[in-house]
Length: 137
Image (cartoon, rainbow, N blue to C red; front, side):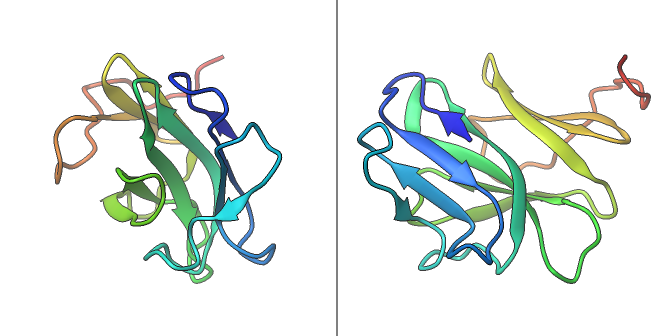
């Protein structure tokens, strides 16, 4: 679950696609929820983590695991509040355990280290920025 800091009544929630959709969104603080993944191009998949751009509540990222994959390894982004999602990164056989937004960067914590992507640049690959591939205590 992720709150939109710019508009705290906007909340995104992700989970299992088997519970009627991968990503749901509310714009009224949780009184009503809408599935913003079934009609979009998100795969029939599960999600473990998502984050929202602190300055733009219509921009969000979600880590996705397709049923034919063992690990959460694809990162999708919406720029329109969930109507359309684009795959912006696929890490192959790497488990994305958490994603966060920090000073214009989207950070993806994995078992193989931390990867980052500058949020303002479309169509770029995640990089590890020479961060060490080790567990953080």
